[in-house]
Image (cartoon, rainbow, N blue to C red; front, side, top):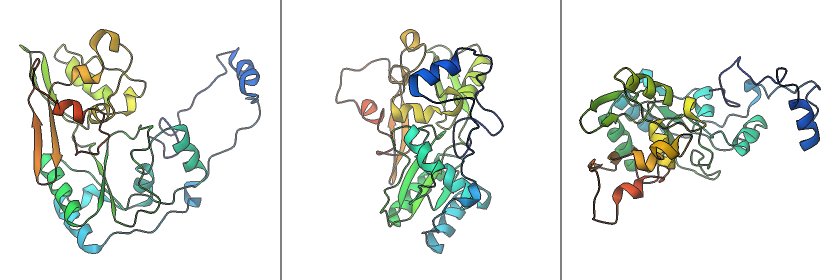
Length: 268
């Protein structure tokens, strides 16, 4: 996505084919859409904070994921700083970025995620899981006064439907898969996940689970809490696994604790 908004560069909302839209906006919020629009702040003008991470930790993270999957460049760090709420976008466009990730890592499998988590714990670093970046609750943002290194863990390489059990109707899907990719992979075998939030194009399965997502057609297939039957969550020194069972009479439900946890309990 754009660093300063939704969508990709070169694609924007146009209202010219909606003749009543400009008048509605003028009446509702007194904004004249015919006036020239202001351009967002240039990326080169952003006050990018310096890196706050030691060479030893950087070297260990590089060894964990490979040099090509570790990034400290300004663009990657900014893209992983905020979500896409109005508050987030206004702060970005105003250059209000007092604390951003120091490094972005892209693990390729669960074992690499485990290495990253364990390295972060050993170094007393902050670790923030990142899916599609469409979060609107502030969960991607490190505190302004955070003095420890901040590591953003982007799960974008974990984007596959691993298998489908056609008898039970269950699929194992990696957490970094985006909505359209999930539907394409499932559709090749005649299946659908049936989850279509407004952020569908730019959000991931792991993000849906972490935010307890709901969306269009949830009244037919259920929201993500109904659809999710089992989970694997990487925690310090271990992997939490909840089995995919049709129902259970035991409690409290660990699965329910993970749903909506916003990355606070581990990396889904």
